[in-house]
Image (cartoon, rainbow, N blue to C red; front, side, top):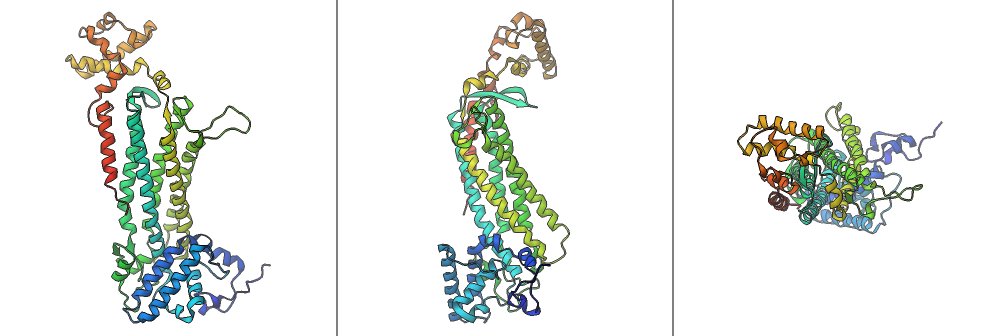
Length: 468
């Protein structure tokens, strides 16, 4: 039978009510310091602000507050230098920092937690941490958008097949296709910026659940920590993890976009239509000729991981009563993993895009005359024939070419005139992939002018997304 830990519960922040020791398995089960130590800086900054605000509610004198702040700055230096020592009694980052503060400045450190609970403390730390990570993510998104528009501009004249149902459909520009994956990332950046304001709300001063007994100035706390607002209800403030769910949902959608892009690139790479840098590929331990697009496959695979983090945490939340419950400790590992995964995926995607090269000759091989069937219908529309009629005529042209065993563009003017009298000698102009692309000249279309316009519009919109 497992023996009890020698560390009495009375040594815990919450240990006054307990006299027995904690089972060592429970110690491990309960502790979060192994992963929440990542928030050491946010926890210290939150405590510094709290120490300053305790002056106005007469808990600390100005001198005492300054001593605590100085002590916290010493703790910060230890974390920065890597000399901070985590002790077995440190359940979490809050316990660790307060324990070390008290070691440095003595019993005065025990005043810091007056009126504060780890419930509002951890909610504050996570919001501060996530707020900082959002800035990093926004900058990474802007990097991808910048690189994508640069590559789109560079290869503006390259044509390729556009697909629906994985079947050749119409002619598009390579740049148009690339921008089709860039625009969702622009939306992702806009969404992230929007949700950042809901992250940037201060719960500090809410206490364990019922509020602060010493009437701390929560607006002052929010200002010191650069929060935009304070939470409206203390019960909600300490149990609210909507902002994490919203971020996780945002990350899931972003990863879906990256996964779709990766899948397209995997197909293009498999067809030798795009050259990927060796930096983002690996080989086979058996087959020396292999150059596998592992970066893209991992982007696709890690999407499931992020979606799983989102789904898992929603399941954690769904049955929780008000207010704080220990279940909420499960918010952080998934969140930290998602942020780290997404940041890595964005960096990898930027690298893949900046180093990839379309292979124009191979892309041209995928352009087949049958993709111009719609252009036949549109030719007749310009001759005054109703589209519903021209659609059937174009389909008959495709069938005629199949019956004759020739490509669509090898039908003669006479062949086409047998289908409708409106075909004239100028019909041969439609057998041009460049002309087909240039005819799609509406806003958002694949003509050269419209794609160049899209590049500039995307750049302009990206420039409006502020990261600070």
